[in-house]
Length: 144
Image (cartoon, rainbow, N blue to C red; front, side):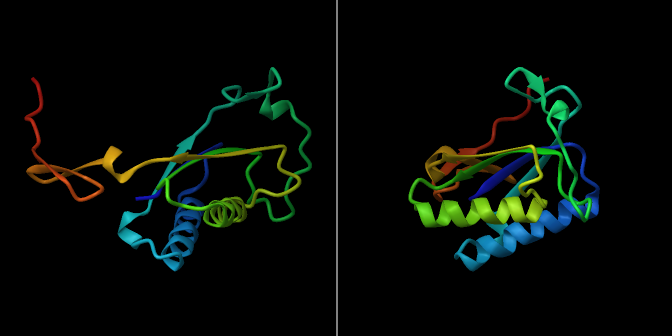
């Protein structure tokens, strides 16, 4: 269940959707079921990301020709520990291309976190199950 968290300055909804679709299409081409792909966007406010003690907004920025690339991006990809270097390299390229990050982007950080499906829990109606298919049982009622 690949989960990709993208932190950038606010992106418009059509742009987020385009990025999510591109990533989902790439992952399905690698054999991942589309319904198992999770792409999460977390907008970052000014002066909340620093590099070398400086807010990334202070880094030199020439802008992107099509104005669609972010000024900065931090991306975390949680993928199965069995994914090899070719998969991670391809996904990293796909993420940066989908975002429009290029040589003019002053800060783009991408990290992979190997995550076992046994460590991912999903709520499903009355039950809770792990991504590896193991049933955990009924979910506990919310505390009041």
